[in-house]
Amino acid sequence: MSAGLRLVVLGMMGRCPFGGQTWLYLNWLRGLRALGHDVWYVEDDTVWPYDPERETVTDDCVYALRHIRDCMDRIGLPDRWALRLAGRPDACWGLSPQDLATLYASCDALLNIVGATGLRDEHLTAPLRVYVETDPVTAELRLAAGDAHTREAFANHHVLATYGENYGGEDCGVPLNGLDAKYRTTRQPIDLDLWPMAFDPHARFFTTIGNYRQDGSDVEYRGETYRWSKHHEWGKFMDLPTRTPQPFEVALKVDDPGDQARLMAHGWRVISPLAMSLGIFGAYPEFIRRSRAEWTVAKDQNVRLRSGWFSERDACYLASGKPIVAQDTGFSNLLPTGEGLFAFSTMEQVLAAIDAINADYTRHCRAARAIAEEYFEARKVTARLLANVGLS
Image (tube, rainbow, N blue to C red):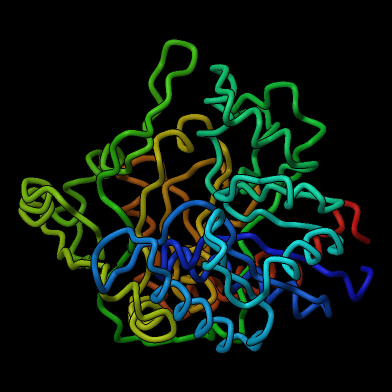
């Protein structure tokens, strides 16, 4: 691997300053920096950030600015960031607009992680632009339906690096739309120093964190509707707490009181993730570390089309030594399962996995950490991606 590359990571952790999104970027930044590269985090778009103190989207970047600055300080990159609201000459921090333009033109690669930044002319001066697709399937289905926005977004990048690690597999139904040669597969990096083993044999709850219902992003493909919201998959396993003595505590954003009542009536202990998710280095990782294990579902799109997707949050659980029971998206083709990590499609498989974990908890905790070390360690993952895009 060539050392000393200048790499720009485009992101949105100021726009969406919660634990899941923020740790996604921090782990990438730490992994790239650990390889010896000059790594910059840049948030540069027209989209206004969300301010959780005011509980609103706003063009006032005070919270976003503080959040980015604090996070970059904590990971040892205090002077390697910039935030700009494009179109506002008075809204640029960390670098001047001129220095930001120079950074794009002088970098070796631009990594548009999540793909949330719409590239403009300045970004297009970067010699290598990589779209890191962390939430696969939706864009591919939209492109198959002729969506012009997705076509332009993909065309503005030289490489499409996807968490859909089963793309191209015999059992994967995701259309690649004739772009097979642009695709590379990657996965979530995890910084093992920031996510240490947290073994506690007395931990009680199987947990997870996420959104329960998110409407508006379903996609039609070949006459079928592929669902975005996870509540469809939750519904298939709603009575899980009544089938096992294992208790569950789920940090779910649930907006509908009817949904909340239904979950609680079936035995789920439901807590709000919002305040906890703002504790980037405190309450958020602490929730994971005090968990016994994780049980979680995936989006219908990933499950039915077998994309191979695996979440950043799951990697954090594994690194913390927490066994995982996760709905199979095809990741079982790529990662070892049956010890520390279990893939399920049926209720019977869930119950068997829970029993196995609780029967030999120490072994499964150690196996979870070992999977993180072997398959998700930040330097390994980032080095592999850079090699796969030709930066070696």
